[in-house]
Image (cartoon, rainbow, N blue to C red; front, side):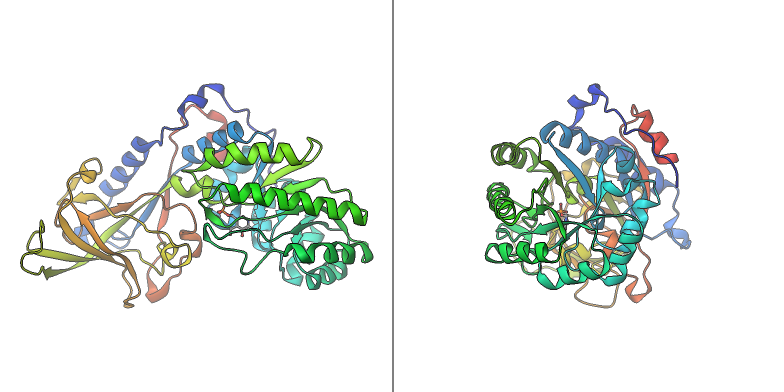
Length: 430
Ligand code: PLP
């Protein structure tokens, strides 16, 4: 496997630019990709949706993490978006990785990432995947129940285990506690059982829920983790690792960091290694999705509907809920349509203007569940062949897309709005 070399040293000059979302690069990429297409000619592929991925945005998020949570090592949650360029970039920046399965571990190992930079953070694992981790020296893994402990004893007794505890995830988009996490009244018996089985417990992990909007959930979880560290000490374990999981948003990151960092410092001495498993935080903003209007249905508005033109439109577009927009069902997202191109004109910048034409937006399949937006207002009445775009489409989108009804999965075009970072470019072309 290729040698990734030393982690990239982050240039100081970029610190001032974290808020720059690199829109110009995304716009130019959308434009040049559209220019290369000839939808009218009905050429194969020319109506397919496509992502523009700005790897520079991922890079900026990394700088932002380092600045706000310097004590916490990010282990990127591959499941969120296993895009090969994103994963390669993060590997070259020296992040670790949270993998959920054998295939994700394989993907990361194939880039030359050291085994100790990988955590197999799925509390309920398939036997063959545990074996794969064992055969490849990936020791860190989570568990949250007695059955899993017995399985690990049988398949990988030398694993370094983290006990995943249940936290309050009621203020998050995707509550993971329904499925995972040991309630605090079970942690002591689990630790005792692990001791009996002579297993190596090295730490505690938690996940406050994906898309968490309550920073105090992190503080509460850190306090719970402290209790479990103390319980472990009473059983004879000297825990050294705290894993604060994922759940960080790109819009509330500073607010979370401002309470999480001090909570960690208050409850855990500097000898304790702290890692996290951010997914959404790194990629949500980095991917923009463009879709083509492949069909349109005109609907007469009710007479007297205030402020509306006399017609509304149903737009049928080239990607949908069974594809990249699965995030609507699985991740509770609400993607917002904006006009990208109308009547051969590129309208990326104007599209945020006055919006009075009512529409709904639908995916391309024959299923009525395949609805992207039940009601939106756009500045133009669009036609077949026009384009819409959706921002913030990087998290839990393409990775769970299917080919239902035979529609292709939207491909990715890459741009880099951090041109100065030469090392990053090298890493990407390696
Ligand atoms: N870690 C684990 C174990 C997860 O299950 C998830 C998401 O489901 C993540 C990390 C990433 O979470 P997020 O994208 O909210 O940061």
